[in-house]
Amino acid sequence: MSGTPDTNPDADASPDAGEKPEKDPSLRSTEVTEGPDKAPHRAMFRAMGYDDKDLASPMVGIANPAADITPCNVHLDDVANGAIVGVEDAGGMPIEFGTVTVSDAISMGTEGMKASLVSREMIADSVELVSFAERMDALVTVAGCDKNLPGMMMAAIRTDLPSVFLYGGSIMPGHHDGREITVQNVFEGVGSVASGDMSEEELYEMEHEACPGAGSCGGMFTANTMASISETLGLAPLGSASPLAESEERLEVAREAGEVVLDAVENDRKPSDILSKESFENAIAVQVAMGGSTNAVLHVLALAAEAGVDLSIDEFDEISKRTPKIANLQPGGTRVMKDLHDVGGVPVVVRRLLDGGYLHGDAMTVTGNTIAEELETLDLPADERIDADFLAPVNDPFHEEGAIKILKGNLAPDGAVLKVTGEDNFHHEGPARVFEHEEDAMEYVQEGHIESGDVIVIRNEGPQGGPGMREMLGVTAAVVGQGHEDDVAMVTDGRFSGATRGPMVGHVAPEAVVGGPIGLLEDGDTVTVDIPGRELSVDVSDDELDERRENYERPERQYEGGFLRKYGDAFDSAANGAVTNPAVKRDD
Image 1 (cartoon, rainbow, N blue to C red):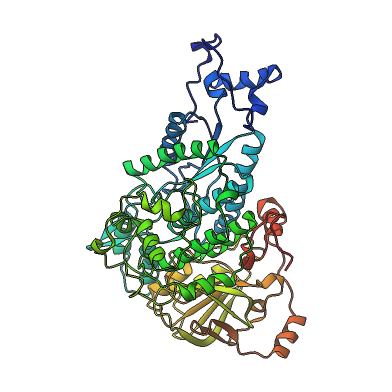
Image 2 (cartoon, rainbow, N blue to C red; image 1 turned 60 degrees about the horizontal axis):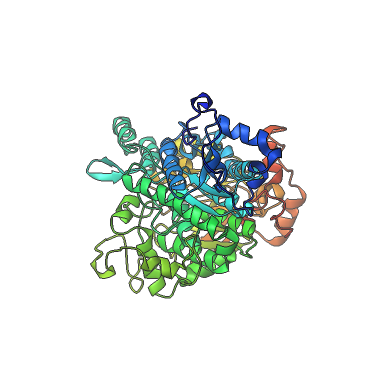
């Protein structure tokens, strides 16, 4: 592994010179490093180049999902090495280990996207497993692609070891025809080509220009949303989310993470000491104020469940109603994370919300300071000197309410999630065009069948029904790319990408395969999507829905074995975060 010490045992096979350092007996790693009976264990460590000084130090796991399968993670060895240096400089013993990852963008629109949400669970499980087995004292959890972030934070919360979350950073924006672009524009370009509004030659040019290097997708999509949330939850230092992936600042953030985790060990500062109801309310406020991804609803619910904090999906709507939307980044706007970093990063947004009374300033952070105290330690530009057309003051916001809306009604009794990327007074009634799977809907859209007023319904894509609750950026981008951003709605028990824009309603609960009303819809039923009224309903009587329910037949399982069967059976409702950990699943 890249962070392992010199591993040539023949270089110095003799015992360490000098007096053997003493180890803090309260550290969990003493179970594998101390006493004569642990000589075999120490022998294994020495084979990897660790010495007595290392073995007497706190053992810090560096969970690193580096991989060559996505630009989000391709550079994470460098980021992890920065954390390793920070741990070593602060007197710790870094032990790097790997975890799985998948590329959401590359698996998008394929059967492979079913693995995306499962990877969140596998990351959390694997980091918990390794740190438990090896008796580690602390963690630095590194993350790149979307599901890495909640998975790593879930693991830190579940283990309750002193931990620091470390984001790998976002990609530089691409440039095409004099404007900044991201992979979102390429996905929408597919729809534009299908409708004849873009040539295949231009789309080919865009695919070369959209992703110029390493890092997570640059807009306020899922990765950058969760990175921003990590700061406001207190699991990552303020200011750590926005430095770009390929920058010296990102490596400085990594080194700082290694130093901070040793301070957390020394002061026995654990996630349970940091996280509170106020922390989660802060996280939601920042999400809705920045126009963050709908996926964050799912992930924040899961994080709260792991932390034992009582949080319901309705609270996202309550907080969104009282929090102004003050940032206008992609996908709703045109700017990206780099632009936010250039004016001070997430702390600038935090400061405005805190000064406006929208955040709890006394919520704790991983540094040992409250979020208000930590904000004072940063060298930020004066608020009145920030000239950015994508940031608004709280008294003159882009929207009076935040971007996340929770819709309910006879089509979604347990709730559904929508992110406003355009006008927040959207009201739509139209005929349902019902599809049993994403592929059928994509074919329908690409063949040009959609008409103004349609409501595209995609079901059997929920946590259990998919299984895996696929993201559907391919379909939503194709709809928008064909010019139907404002006059065609979509409703699904699956998910949408953080890059999705338009009136797209996801996370419909209960999902179809567990008897949710979305499974009872028929072609032509009139569906209402009403943002101001927070309504998602179908113009069908309760008696008619009951009659349809009696005739409903659950689709046959697509997978009889493997990880999709195992995790599909374990997933809870999207309204509860789609968790699989039995200890945090709800009975309701």
